[in-house]
Length: 141
Ligand code: IPR
Ligand code: MG
Image 1 (cartoon, rainbow, N blue to C red):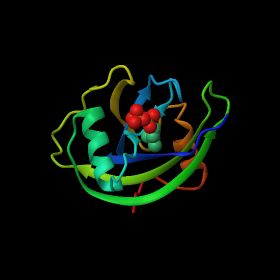
Image 2: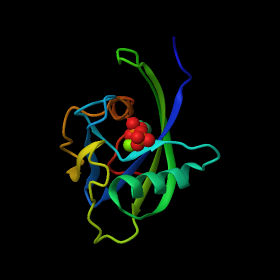
Image 3: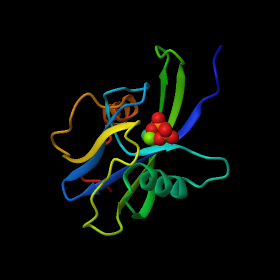
């Protein structure tokens, strides 16, 4: 039995030449490096979802949140197959001195800033799809 596609919002949070990524603990994409983000809630705007998910997962406050693009992936091999439409939002830190916290240690091993020219691998599938599609995180326009 299949379930309906779900919508996630992923946040491209850039600081200088680095981007914020965390290694996933969740079963979907376990051990892969992903942007902060999560499921869109009923009635929520993409901007509100981006700010909420980043706060819930990293404790960071963000600003200048703007829509970027979208990816479409199916995790058909998963025990519970998932069709994920990921909406990408770019943002900046509300205060550049903030340090990301691992607020949800059951979902993420930890957050860090990674050099955009030397991203850690493996990447979470939707992020891999984004980059394979020719999207460049740097410079982010
Ligand atoms: P939650 O809502 O648990 O953060 O979900 P997720 O991190 O598995 O959602 C993935 C959505 C992508 C686009 C970050
Ligand atoms: Mg998440």
